[in-house]
Amino acid sequence: MLLWLALAGSTALAGAPPQLVFPSSAELVRVIVSVTDPAGRPIRGLKSTDFTVTEDGKKRQVATAVACADFADEASPECSVDLVLLLDTSGSMRLILDNARDAAEQFIEQVPAAHARSIVAFDSRIRAMPIGDKTPAAVLDEALGKGAGGGTRLFDAIFLGLRRFSTDAARRPIMVAVTDGEDTSDKPMGGGRRGGRYGGLAALSSRRDDAPHRSLKDTARALQLAGVTFYGISFARRVGNGQATLQSMATATGGLIVDGEATDLKGQFNRIREDAATQYVLGFVPGASAVGKTHNLKVTVASAGSTVRHRLMYETRSRH
Image 1 (cartoon, rainbow, N blue to C red):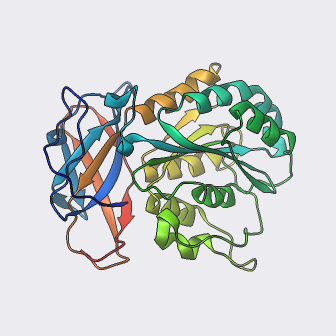
Image 2 (image 1 turned 135 degrees about the vertical axis):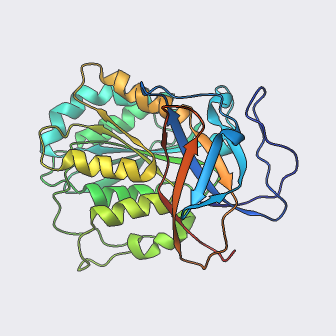
């Protein structure tokens, strides 16, 4: 996600919540980063100098860094969230979703700094339901009341979910899927809106009914181009390649997969909430590149034993 900002000042992560500061007239690439210790707990209090970003193997200047944990009460624009919750309402998930309803409701209400929230329910059909002025409980009940179809159009649901995010490039788009991870559909979803925050996704978002079925590779790429962090509440232990499918998308985007079949389901939702609440938003100065070129990203921190998660690639949207 490219940021076009020109602000003055200095950036610091210690003490008072910092302001984003960009070199004058600079075009920065934004990367959302999660950092955890060996026990999986978020590491807080990192400074901009603790991060190293490489683009295609070349070290780049980290020009900005904001710790979203510093904005527990009032979010900065850079830490505000757009949330899309995907609910697998296929027959195999029906009883599971009934049991997960209360945990999902609590999660939606407690996601920090969420400005826009939508639910996408999917089985052989896909239904997008913005929460808006309704309560999360009402929209969840609506989603669960119309489910139990035969198929599982997971990838198509993800693409529709991408179109539910706002066009505000400063927000963090977060997608959480409650599913067994299988995509069993044999027909792609037609239509699609061009433009929006993911510009270069037009070719992937707009499809004819006779187009090839979407693949895991296409879906993971689309999530990365949109800067989405993908999380999964996984019920895939008993299903084919479901776990590997969810893990691939989480790894590509810097997300996390948690066990939906754990005894404490609210606790699993809370792991995702805490991870999102403690992310860092980095802006780095990219190298010269042609429009449409994809670049590999790697972020490391100077903290022994830490794990760093972030999207693995981005695409140049304008010449720099």
